[in-house]
Image (cartoon, rainbow over all chains, first blue to last red; front, side, top):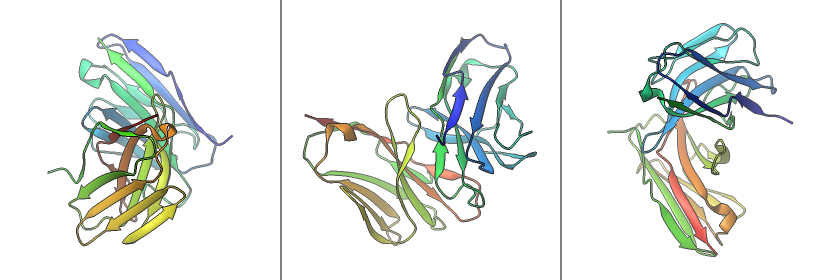
Length: 115
Length: 111
């Protein structure tokens, strides 16, 4: 089954404790992206990757890091989480050659709470 | 001013009603217009996709784009309780590296 998977689905942590949210897709997609979803603000892009070893900032990159060492994986790293990073996070991927402007396939989401 | 504006609702209608969901945008460079549906505790999934002005129909769903007015709509005919979800409009530009999403409208269809 073609899908984007994220882990963990739910995470409660404390300020300053480094964490990683994993994202993996099995569709051989080149483009992958991370979003956060907050009430009243919709989906905002954090980082995106056009291919292996190619990453760039989205609209709200502060406090986040990413890496793309393999085509299928795109982990999101919070080196020192803060309460304002409490949010619902989505990973997405898009078909080869289409970039971001075509259909994006979303993972199930990770609900993060930072206390 | 946000690039894409969408009424967040919530919107509650009886089963069988015609639903109209709308977005306005300010960037005339947008070329692709999409509607995503997001069920509770799930990720968004693409519902409709179009790149031209006019109407596009898919079953009970019709996507309408008016580039001159910078306005897009999604119509749902014969609405069903299973249509209850949050609907997000999204727009993109060929070669750009992101989609711009509206805030989402939460829709409830009451049996």
